[in-house]
Length: 169
Image (cartoon, rainbow, N blue to C red; front, side, top):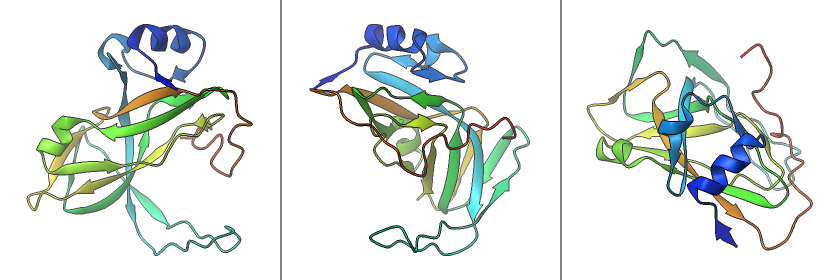
């Protein structure tokens, strides 16, 4: 395994690894790519998680409208990223919150981006700061680090493949 450098990432982006980004020169980092905030939703119901996913229920959510900024009180929020990620069967990615968010008392929780995943991902913003946080639309909130696998794998084929990429978003 190896981590893709900015030069390798730029080449992969030109081949379609990432689309929907705002400014490659700002978002491309030495060891990853900054992803930006498209929308934020408030969770409105309990979810259900089981072993087989046969009884899975995803929590309902409602979009919080941006003016230009959005104020979030302490709690957990679902966020959708601007960028569409298209991982080949030889790459996976891990997302980490940008350090500026951490310095504001906010974190972003993510899952692993499996090889073969394609979509506009959802992440969880958790506001720990008792005073809340202001976020601007299109703010850079996470850095994706791309890891080249030792060998090609079969690739992700779960329910979240192609999520949030319809033109109606």
